[in-house]
Amino acid sequence: MATPLGDPVNQPPAQRPNSTQLLQGRTIDLVHLSPSHTEALWTLVGGTSDPTKASAWAYLPEGPYAEADLDKFQASVAAKCRSTDPIFYAIVDKSQNVLGWITLMSIVPEQLRLEIGWVLFSPALQRTTGATEATYLLLKYAFAELGYRRVEWKCNALNGRSKRAAERLGFVFEGVFRQHMVVKGRNRDTAWFSILKEDWDSRGVREALEGWLAEDNFDEEGAQRKGLESIREELLGKSK
Image (cartoon, rainbow, N blue to C red; front, top):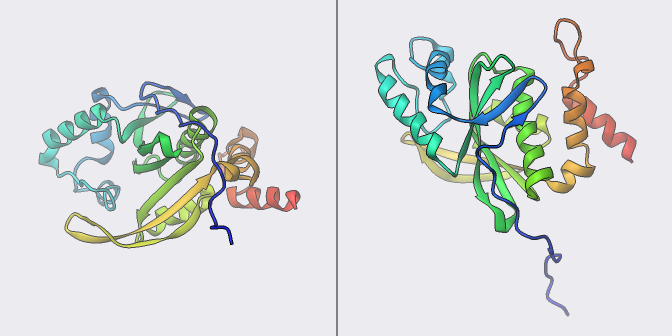
């Protein structure tokens, strides 16, 4: 009896992301994080007197930063600008206002996988079209331009908002790594999600995201006409 083995993979290694690559969307762009973004980011997420600012850091490995911690924040942003894994992208609107950051990380070109993570969405970005578009732009970049076959999303298993966001975007839940990390002195069980290249190409993920982000999916007040998950369900129903 033959020993079962995985399917052959004849795909060459993926390319490493280019930190200087400009990723342009309809409502936001992704640009390499720069020290010039520090002041605007501090205004949005610095200080702890405003609970909405402090809450943006709840599940990140750093922060929140108190009003007296501007120097520490500046040093942290400077280090992020130099980092090659994670690669930090500033999320900017079409008026060049900085709204947060998002990263490509755990980059393993020879294994054709990477992760979208270390996400900092300011209160001004949360629950907006731009928040969804930022993830879409990185998925498109990873699959269509760089040649990856797997994009991961990992989050604290207690972070309900992040888990719901992953599933809404089309990531598939794979399980929980128990006692995976210690973050800020607390246990972190990590929930794992992924999108595969075939999910992106032929299981409605890309097409649903592009349909949801299309300008004609929003009314004059900017409210969505169809939800992302319902668009994806319709696409999957048509493919059966």
